[in-house]
Each structure stands twice: as C-alpha cells, then as structure tokens.
Image 1 (tube, rainbow, N blue to C red):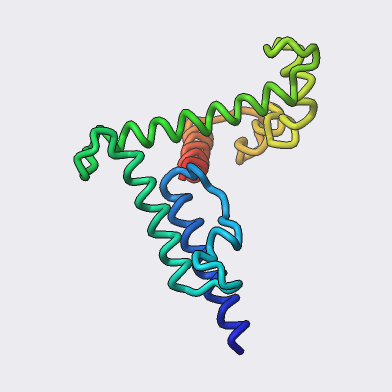
Image 2: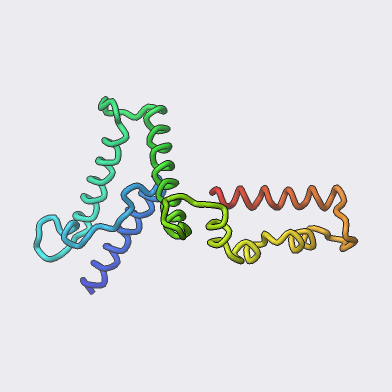
Length: 165
C-alpha cells in the first residue's frame, strides 16, 4: 500500500512539474532523476521532497527571468523570457530540419533538398491543391462561390487558431 501511494505521489508531482514547465515555455523541460528528488539520500522519495524540488526549480526559473534582480518580474522581463524561450525552441526546430534535410552537408538548405525532404508529406497533409479545391467546392460544380470561399477561409482560420494554442 505504501509503495502504491508513493508511486502515485511521484507521478502526480512529476505531472505537476511537467505541466508547470510546459506552461512556461518548456525551458529545461526534463524530468529529474531519482537521485535529484531523493534530497536526503535515504533511498526513498517523499511528497515533501518532490514539492521541495518543484519549488527550487520554480525559484530558479524566477531568478533567471528577474534580469535586474529586484525580486519582481516586470512585463518587459516576462516578455523577454517568453521571446527567449520561443527563439530557443525555434532555433532547435530549425537546426533539426537542416540536419535532416541537408543532403550535401553544407549546413544550408537548397530548394532541391527541401523538396526532397518534403517528399509526398505535403500531399498527405492536404497540400494537394486539387483535393483542397474538391473539399471546399460544397456543391461540386467545379467553381467556388463566395460562400464556399468564405467557409473555407473560416475553417482555415479555426485550424490555425487551434494549432497555435
């Protein structure tokens, strides 16, 4: 019974920590090791140790964002942190894309490499213009009227909104 309770507590703590970090942009988003959580090195992790670890991580994130060290976060500091996190994520994504698609190893992507890397993924994702047209041509007359066009725009906007959240 104690073991089940401890496992549930650890899982809950890790879920809370991961959720909090994801909300803050995923910076440093890694699960702690057992040794990091077992602060007193007694071979067991208590809920108090999990909470202490989470608090320490939150304090560190706050201190990192508090660039002027005044113990408070201004809108500018929070925006700078968000921009930094976003830029870091984007840089990582771009580096991975280049690594995957850079066939000639020059560290740059030429159009041919991009097209080769894309392959038929574009068609599978709905980038086939004919298929897209057929989907929005509700009355199947081979022409888009203003209502069909507006409905398609609205669906795309809704999709973008969902994807950005």
